Amino acid sequence: MYSRIRSSVCVGIEGREVQVETVLSRGLPSISVVGLASTTVMESKERIRSAIFNSGYEYPRGRITINLMPAELKKNSSCLDLPMAVGIIASEQLFRAENLNEWAIFGELTLDGRVSEVRGALPMLMHLRSKGIEKVIIPKGNIDEAYLSGIKEVYAAETLKDCIEILSKPDEATCIKFDMRDQLTTDSYEAIEDYADISGQENAKRAVVIATAGRHGLLMVGSPGCGKTMLAGRIPSIMPAMDEREIIETAVMRSITGEKNLGSRIRPFRHPHHTIGKAGLLGGGSDIALPGEISRAHNGVLFLDEICEFEREKIDGLRIPLEEKRITHFRKGETYTFPCDFQLVMASNPCPCGFYGDKEKECKCRQSDIERYQNKLSGPIMDRIDMKISMERVTYGQLTEGEKGLSSEEMRKTIIRARNFAIRMGRSGYNSDLRGNNLDKHCRLGREEKSFMREAYEALGMSPRAYVRTLKLSRTIADIAESAEIKQEHLAEALSYRI
Image (cartoon, rainbow, N blue to C red; front, top):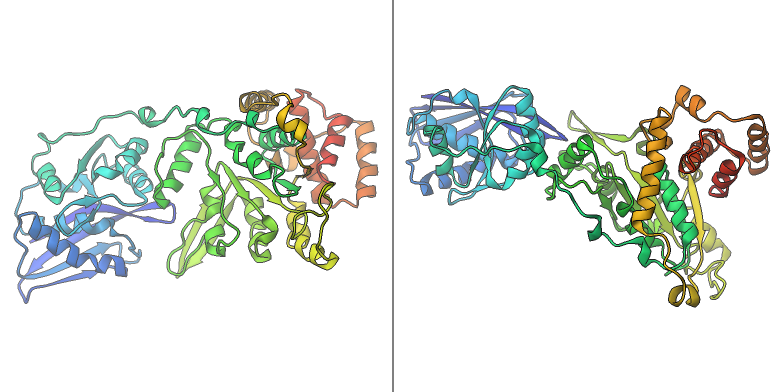
């Protein structure tokens, strides 16, 4: 008595197909699971036994052997509970299923036979679809992922008994019909706080627009309460909505980490506390690698508030991901690569007490403490930050009598115009990603501009990386002005953000 059920597990951000083979044979009652199963999978034996019994089926009294293929792939998920239980019932011939090999099944079982949702369903479904599987039975809680996967026939099971009935009588089962576009939400930016609520700080808003238009790294320095966190928290309200590719990429990360609202077009915004561990920020883990905050911010914003309170090792760990837009971890012979193409925004006080350089309050820190505090940001990481702005307190007059400043809608329109201008000029990506020939082609300088930059390079002691990043930043400023050529005023403004 033999059965084979197709299923899948999630490894990193990718789905991998797993075939669950089950054999019933004579012998003392026992169940053995082979095929490099983790502790999580091995513990499923008791869940499966109880779920089968409480669903009204007789649990086999002989020897049960379950093989998880391929044997070299480590299985570390409770999503194999449901296919293992179905395999046992099918091997006992307690139901008749035709063409069982056409189906794929996954889900976690509770002791009373209910099917619970699992993490990573979207990459698993996308992998199954690439393997030609068009019929899947999944937990009802994972329906949102099924919408985005594009699989044609999806059946939702709330209990183990539902799953068996679907396999026994597929013609009578309810298949969920949908179009992926039905799941893509038309999120309203009104749910995010508006920049119009911020009094003053118009220069800082200008810097935020430039940084967002070209996806440039931004560092804001200022006294406590000057508005750094408010400015950063509203950045998603001015970012253009994600396209279909970006939605899928972001949804995969959200599926792995168990987040909801997978079809949202609003870009992610991650704001980790400075006490976060290195694995929490960059990703990793002891047994298998999981995505960190830099990957959960993919296609969005990573905001590191009080950056000088972070351990220097964590900050320096951002250097390679910022350049490569991905991070790779190695765990027990497996390679896990996570995307991390995000806009980095940081905020800091100028010193431990927060009032160094403040016009109203006196700083009480020793010079050695100030230097130690500011040295948390190493030269290499500062070289990778395109824009650095100093913010001052908002005056009483600006707070109570000042006119309303730029709104999020106005700032977003400016960014969209700049992006459309860049596309018309032959650039589809962000200016911060310009490389090689594209950099030479789109950041070409005239004679006066070259002379201006030569003087600035020598006077400011710029590194080659800082020079290139200044060119990219000036290209973004020119795009906002809808200028095909980078002019001297664009270079001057770009340099002002690096001092």
